Image (cartoon, rainbow, N blue to C red; front, side, top):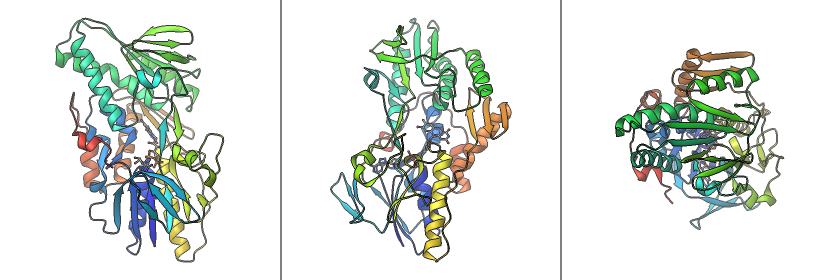
Length: 396
Ligand SMILES: Cc1cc2nc3c(=O)[nH]c(=O)nc-3n(C[C@H](O)[C@H](O)[C@H](O)COP(=O)(O)OP(=O)(O)OC[C@H]3O[C@@H](n4cnc5c(N)ncnc54)[C@H](O)[C@@H]3O)c2cc1C
């Protein structure tokens, strides 16, 4: 069977690995970047950990997989009746079975100045830009107080704000900056941080953030941004660095090809009980309107589900119906402390931090052989490293 997968992230890579187990399958993975992005560790790359923990070359993942071809290209449109995909490079790819796993993009909700004056944390290039800025700003502005504002009290904002303080201390020591005070604020529009977790978790996490020196402001909305100020619920706040961790929207590919898809109110694609959005067309991961969309574990679950069903259909077995599975949530808040929740289980502190480390290892071993997963998983602390831009930039 020939399977064309678009997107080299959690869903696309896992689907390719699952399909590759059948030697009669031929898989073409079309993606716009040479690396798999391990998003859960990305904030760490901005706060003193190595980029090696968060981006893994696709060539490493698919080494030795003879029935997988990785094609670097950007898919722009689909014609489900002709069963073709068209790309930015002008190539038209015919498909037999197509899996779309394009992920999401950052949205700024039209907030004036925010896109220009804030740093993002969603791509390797954005992380690199943030790191260079933080370093240069500290190096140049000795003796001047520094104000860092993290917008968004979801898992990424919380993890980043918590890790920032100790990273800034280490960089200041490295640069011999002794006389600057660091102010870190976390702003969240909802009444509490981690609004998708329990209230108990939010209270403990806020307390922990405050202990780490982060000033938490909930129920506050960012209204506009300039180079050195942001307007928050009618009040001006001075800022040296604004980091936007909020605002995720479905990939614009779907709106650009809206005549072929149906959309849920949150902009994700409506799929049937087999994760199909059309004949021989599957939509998985962050793109699909499932109950737990937006999580890496959901994308992995979706990939395994469709690979199994496609195998079933080729062998004449009855197809399974999609069942959403609630993944556990574990958010690190500084070193050796995390909050973990799954169904009725609620843990905080070092035990939860250990669960997070184990979860990360399982995340890497989902896409790599155990030995390589271990190599990436072990902590690589660096202060200020400049990863090879070849590994960061989009290759087209
Ligand atoms: C900063 C951050 C932290 C996160 N932390 C966690 C966490 O701790 N736990 C958790 O469960 N989830 C976390 N998530 C969410 C998780 O990463 C996503 O749910 C998961 O990546 C979704 O997988 P996906 O395959 O749908 O999309 P992605 O993994 O985003 O993959 C999409 C792929 O498509 C490629 N692509 C995009 N457009 C095109 C195009 N036009 N043509 C070809 N290729 C294209 C992209 O380059 C990428 O390779 C986090 C997300 C972010 C941004």
